Length: 315
Ligand SMILES: [Zn+2]
Image (tube, rainbow, N blue to C red; front, side, top):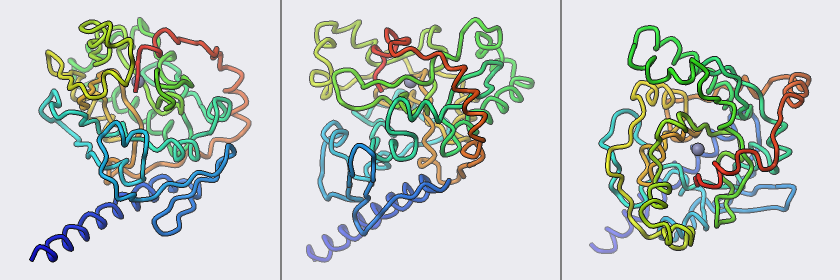
């Protein structure tokens, strides 16, 4: 009986791992990038050297051990739930999307600051021009989010009021997408390094766990991840962003950081693998090289650009 139970359990676990790995493989190769998979192993031939990761390494690791020792299935090991859910998220380290496989992101979006920069295009978003990653349909998805938000604002006065700082250009959106940098105190690249994340309403009182930690325990916060990784954070009030805006982002393949136990209400990140009904639109992958040159000339990123903000913003 026990044997049968363990057998069933094992089969179920490996099945769900395979589903996760197939989904990751399918979504990230949808626009034509090839990923070399042989059985349990994913091989990434990066310029900096080949890297291989198993679909399933059979290890049971804690969240922060896993973050430094990824296998492919773990990307989807914490499900992201679309729509209205009870917040704040009280389960410790329940941060769907924060388990990322850097080699995969490098393979798809660019391996270095220069390479990612070449893949950035300007997107019209709420009357602003923002730089975003063109690969895997990310720029196209952000553009669609902007169009849908504009359409919705015509019938939803509360959404219009909420997004007013952008419409009146009181907040400059161009500054909160791309920044090539490590998460402070770690050797992990921030998601903003790949140009696939955008921070919104940064100056309008966003709820961000690390800023709260720095206010509550400034000494501990200085020690970095090693000090806070086992601490359980719960905000004093439920993370908020206009629900219609969150819905529109999710519909277009973006996760919202407000749903993390390590809450981050300003943060939206293009992660199409979390939305089985979402199909990547590869059109932005196909933007001609000539227009990229033009865009590149417009980019004015400085290596330390906005570093004061980003150094205090870990995700
Ligand atoms: Zn962010």
